[in-house]
Length: 102
Image 1 (tube, rainbow, N blue to C red):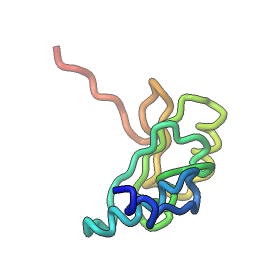
Image 2 (image 1 turned 60 degrees about the vertical axis):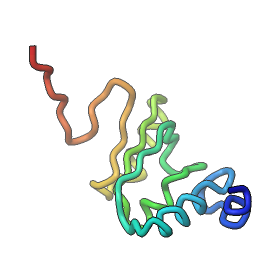
Image 3 (image 1 turned 180 degrees about the vertical axis):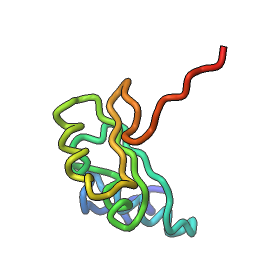
C-alpha cells in the first residue's frame, strides 16, 4: 500500500498528495465521472482533495461551516451549477429540505 501511495502521491491542489492518489484510484476503478464531497471544503480551492476531480468533469459538494470561506467557495464555483456549497445546518443551493413524515 505504501508503494502505491509513494508512487502516485502528488499535489495539484491538495496538501499531501491526496488529489493525485484519488485520481489514480478512480482511474483504476474505471470511474470517469461521479459525485465527490469534501467536508471542510474551505474556499473550494486551497488544499482541496476534490478540486482536481471537479476540474475533470465531476459533480462536487463542498461542506464548510465558516461563513466567509463558504461564501468564497460559492463565488468560486458560481459558474458550475453542478458544484454545490453547503453550510452546516443550511440546505444545498437549489434544494429544499424535506419535511419528515409524522
